[in-house]
Image 1 (tube, rainbow, N blue to C red):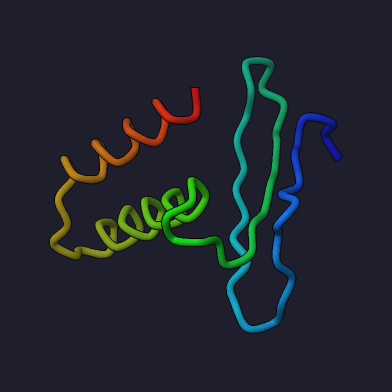
Image 2: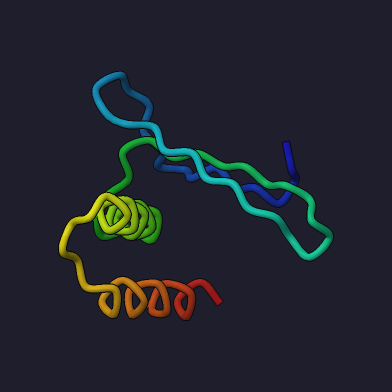
Amino acid sequence: MDENIKKSEDELIGFDGTTYYFATTNENEKVKIGETWSPNKKSQLGRLVSICDEIFSLGNGKNISQNKIVKNIEKLITELK
């Protein structure tokens, strides 16, 4: 496990939610993988899950505003800096 990955102190464990997995690469193209279980919808991870769901729905032909998705991504990135 990467030493830069942080476990939330208030992380919940359960069997009646959804586990979400995320993967990315850093500037050295090293893959980093993380997971979260049913995050609070207002948390940063919850908002990331929502953005991913919207992108998935957009790809499946749903009528979703691409501009809204981009704005939500930009806002989340700004908060994470």
